[in-house]
Image 1 (tube, rainbow, N blue to C red):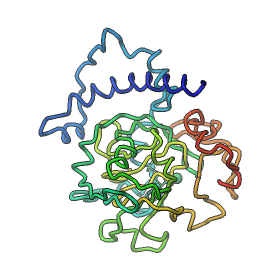
Image 2: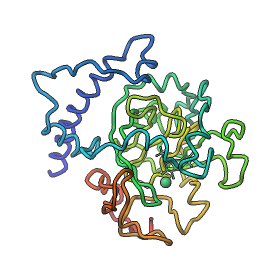
Image 3: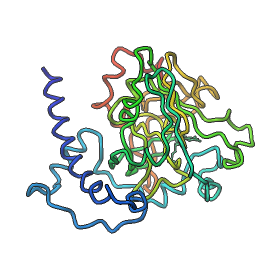
Amino acid sequence: MAEKINEDKITDQQTYLNRRTFMRAAALAGTATATTLLYRRLNPPPPVPVEGEKLNDVAKAAIDGNGFTTNERLTPITDITNYNNFYEFDTTKDGVASAARGFVTQPWAVEVGGLVHKPKIFDIDELLKFPLEERVYRLRCVEGWSMVIPWIGFPLKKLLEKVEPTPQARYVAFETLLDPKRMPNQETGVLDWPYVEGLRLDEAMHPLTILATGLYDEKLPPQNGAPVRLVVPWKYGFKSIKSVVKITLVADEPPATWNIQAPHEYGFYSNVNPNVSHPRWSQATERRIGEFGRRKTLLFNGYADQVAHLYQGMDLVRNF
Ligand SMILES: Nc1nc2c(c(=O)[nH]1)N[C@H]1C(S)=C(S)[C@@H](COP(=O)(O)O)O[C@H]1N2
Ligand SMILES: [Mo]
C-alpha cells in the first residue's frame, strides 16, 4: 500500500502548487494582453490569501518534496541569460547571448506527429495558452556546473495527450529549428544539424518533464531556447533541447545529438549520476553558478524520489 499513500501525498502537494500557480494564471488569463503581460516584468499584485492560509514554509517544503520547486537560492537572471550552451549560436558560454540577440521566433510552430492518432501543428500562440505553471528546477550541465532556474511552462504530457499516442509509440523524438540564416553557427559543422534529442515515452510523460516558454517573469530569452524548449530536470542539461520545432512519437530509440557525436561519452539516458564518471572527468561534484567551491552532485540531480522507479532493474552504468 506504500504506493497508494504516496499517490495521495502527491495529489495533496499538487493542490498547493496549483493554488499558487493559479494566482499567477488568474491575473493573466482571459485578457487580450495575457501573453504580453506574462512577458513583461510584472509587479505582481499582493498575494491573495488562499482559504485563510499563507504559503508558509510548511507548504513550501511540501512542494519541495514533489520536486516541483526547491528552497535553494535562485540563480540570478543575469547568469541564466549570459552563461549558456546553445551551439546553434556560439560555442562559448558567454558568446551565446549576443549571438542570439534578435532571434526571430514569430511566426513559430511545433509539428507533433508520428505514431499518434491526432497529429497536429501547434502554433506558438496556442502553446502559450496551455495553463502555465512555475517550476523551480536545478539544471546540471554535464560539464560540471549547475543553476537553479524558475521556469514557466507546462507538462509535456499535456501536449502529448492531445495528439493521442498509439500503442506502438515507445519513444519521443525532438528537433530544434534548422535555419542557418537565423542560427548562424549552423553554417559550421561543429555538430550535425538540426540538434535532436529523445526520451522514452514514460520519461516524456513524467510530471516533472515540461516544455518551458518563460523564466522568472520573462518570455523565454533567445539564448535559453526561445520560444519553447524542453526541460528534463533529472538529466544532464543537453537533453533539454532548445527552440523545438518538431516532436515525433516513434517505436525505436531516436538519435540524440551528443550521443551521435561521442557515443562513449554521452549515453541516450544521460541521467545525472555522481557514480558514473564521464570518461574525461568525474561527475561527483558540481559548481553552482554564483557560488564558490563545489557541492556534491545528487543521483538523478536530486529527483530520485520522483524518477528512480522509471529505471528499476536497469543497470545505470551500462545505460548511462
Ligand atoms: N538546440 C540546442 N539545445 C540545447 C543545447 C544546444 O547547444 N542546442 N545545449 C544544451 C546544453 S549542453 C545545456 S547545459 C542546456 C543549457 O540551457 P540554458 O542555456 O538555458 O541554461 O541546453 C541544452 N539544449
Ligand atoms: Mo550542458
